[in-house]
Each structure stands twice: as C-alpha cells, then as structure tokens.
Length: 409
Image (cartoon, rainbow, N blue to C red):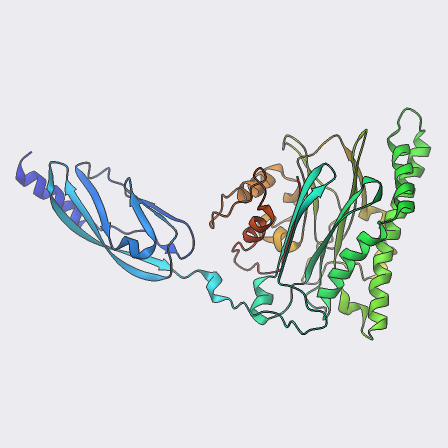
C-alpha cells in the first residue's frame, strides 16, 4: 500500500471526533470501538486507562471505574500495513460520581431503648426447602441516622409447620421500628402452639379430602381455618395495643404493616396460609416458572400514608376474611415476601405482581443482570444471605426506603 494512503488513513482516524460514553463510578462500564469506517486501523493500547480501574482488550474498554473524574486518555494505534509506526489519539473519559456516595450513612443510636441494627440476614431450612431473608435500612433513614423500620421473623413450629413474617413500620410512627419487630415476632409466637396447629391441620385435611368431605363440610372447615388465622392477627393487634398502653404512648406510634406465610407439606401438597395488611406482597411462583399468584390482599393507597396497619382496630371490622388465603399446590419454585422498599422500584405497579414476565426480569436481576453485577446464587448458596443483602443495596432514583426480601426456594 502506498505510503500516502497509509498516512491519509491514519490522519483521518486521528482527526475523527471520538466521544466515549460516560461512565459511573463503582458501576460496570463497557465501551466497544466501532472501527467499520477504519478497517486498516488497529488500536494497540490505551495509555492512562489503568488509572481509571478499567482495562482494554479486543477493541473494548470494560470494568468498574474507581472514582468520579475526567480522565485524559491516549489511544495508541497503528496502520495494519505499518505496525512499527505508532500514533497517538487523545480522548476524554468522564466518570460520574456514584449517586450512592452523596448519601450519608449515619449509624443509629446504640443507647436507644429500641435500638435496631441497620441490617439483618437469615438463611436456613424451611420445610423441605430453603429460605433466605435480608433486611436493610434505607438510604433516607441512614442519611438522618434513623433506624431500620422493617423487620422479619422465621420459625420452625411444632408438627412440621414453618412460618415467615415480614413487617414494615410506618415512617410517620415514632416507634415504628419496635412495632414492626413486635408484629413479626408475636405473629410467629401465636402459631407456635401444638393445639392451634393441630386444629388447623384437622380442618385443612377436611378441606382437601374431596372423597370423604361434603362441600358444606369443606366450607365450614375453610371458615374455621380463617377464624384461627384471624385469631393470630388479632393477637398481634392486642400485643401492640398492650405495649403502647404499658409504655404510655399511642398505638399509632407502633403503626406497622404485616404479612405472613404459615406453611406445611402434606401428602396431598404444600399448604400455604397467608395474611396481609398493608402494601407488602406475598407471591407464589410455580415449578416451571410459567405462572405467579399474589396470595394476599394489598392495601395500596392512592396517596402517601394511604396504606393500612395491623394496629388499626377497624381492619378487623371490614371484610377480614379477604385478608387471608388458603393455598395448596403440589410444588412451587419460589415463595416470596417483600416490603414496598423492594416492590416499588422493582415492580412499580400492583398489576405487575401477577405478571410472570415481570417476575422473570426480577429473578434475572437477582442472577446478576444489574448495574452493580451483584448476584444471588440459589444453587451454590453457602453465602446466599450476604449476597442478598448486598443486592438490596441497588440504586433506584427516588426509592430509598427500607428493603426486606424473603425467598423460600
């Protein structure tokens, strides 16, 4: 090839206006050089790139940049017919600040009578399956040194039952952090009873013994199970009301939502008994991930504070039975409980909670398809609780509430 042509093609590449897309610190970055217009130009190296935390290989810049700054980079390139002659092209890379770094992380007062850790995790057995739970203080609370208002409790119960409860204290309630803790713990403690569980079991067997039970008898048994679940919810209300009275503050100061799933595996399938008050969902996904069901009634307010709480006596005067669910399935892949700190940014609207494509996207996110490349591994799961906790630190503009997610798998 003539030297004049080589010179011209190198000069054309040197003079072309090349703009690298902006990066964000602490977030995965990838940029591929499009060389279609310059088939005879080969990029050999990018000088100063190591200062950013990124690397260059196969015409691609990738990695996670360290910190925000404007970086001056030198592209080392040559012509494929004159590889011994190296030229330099200057470009700039802007790395934006990680928005997470703009939020303070002030610890809560450990001397407070109702101190609560900023984070909590749990992993273990649940029936013949496994469970993982992570609860993390939201950035809005961390920024002001306030406490995490979400809570959860997981218990193995007599007669091979298991229960998981998740609660979300109201932001406007002064003692919401204690209200949510009490709600989850007291719900589980009510059902930690041989007598209660035995009575539930007897009626469950009537409901699903289609060969020996009449429709009327099955209906009566269903009503009895709902009655027993209602007694559990009412017990939680009484505990919160009594706590407020004994400590001379209003029960409104303990406002909290509550959802729970009381489960057992029978010969005829997994029975899942659910309750919900507030805006936190309980979802069941079938084994081949083709169907999802919302197992509880959602109280989604049209305005801030429009949700309902277990502390409100009137919820027991409404159509209380609609708050409970009795579900039986041969098997399932996931049973998921979450607070609105997860639901709002990941599902946005209530109708998406029963959209299987939205759930596929959600679990794809958990599998590592996210800006932070954080992965929750349900197969090699020895570190799954800490992985889930890390995942809950995802960035979502305008969504900085506490986040609690429980997954039975």
